[in-house]
View 1 (tube, rainbow, N blue to C red):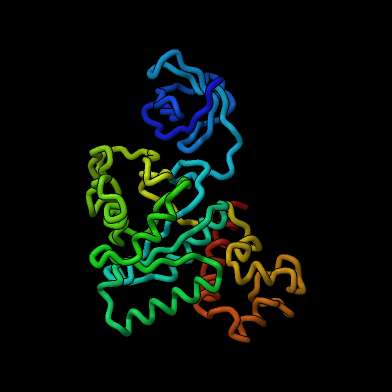
View 2 (cartoon, rainbow, N blue to C red; view 1 turned 60 degrees about the vertical axis):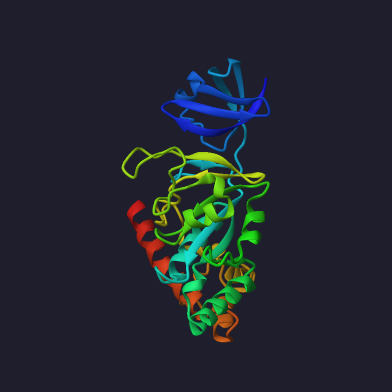
Amino acid sequence: MPKGTIVKALSGFYYVQNEDGLFQCRGRGNFRNRNIKPLVGDEVVFEAENKTDGYVLEIMERKNELIRPPIANVDRAILVFSAAEPTFSPLLLDRFLVHVEANGIEPLIVISKIDLLTEEELETIKQYRNDYEQLGYKVYLTSTIEQLGLDAIRKAFDDHVSVIAGQSGVGKSSLLNAINPALDIETNQISSHLGRGKHTTRHVELIPFGSGLVADTPGFSSLDFIDMEPEELSHYFPEMRDRLPSCKFRGCTHTQEPKCAVKEALAQGEIREFRYEHYVTFLEEVKTEHKRRF
């Protein structure tokens, strides 16, 4: 039986791509009975008599899956945040980073529109870049106007399945167009790859991008901390995760507990204060969501 990757799901059809081309398939009947839904990004076994009449028979094990957007087996999340218009928000960036880390996806941080900054503002952004690079994240400063940082970003897409995320207006479409002009994505919209308007039904699609694939999707439509346990949150802050074994209490929330390695590192300046403040903010949200569930 042939294997392939679902690159688009639309109106009950799954479009499976492999070296022999694109096959329009339906899901196997018992998927619904077993409460299984194929997702874009799934590696599948299928059968097809021709290019328009096939069936997805089996879904291979997923390494991860997202609910909103519905996509599986994502390698990288390209998190695009503008340096200005709108103003750079480390709080929102940290929110995205937690969600990406929680799903086992490698995040790459892109700070766009650096051409709009004064020298002083640029130094502030560079300090943030240094902070996040010290945590192990890859950070790119870019300008589509001045063509800065684009070559490095272009290579980041190769041989990976990537999803683009970030708040509206940060220049996601401009960035993709600058890297690959053949896409001709309308700016001010996340995508018009298929000629979709702002108010029509959206769906996820994987489109070729260099030697990789990028998800044509509105990105993360929900950033609520649903189904996360309070003691789990610190696992998604690398500077805290590394220190968890040194905390006196298992399940330490790094707020009131004595002999907390995270609090000690904070006091010694080894953890940046803004990151800790964001952690505390998110922890309250996680606790609130947790109470709603129980």
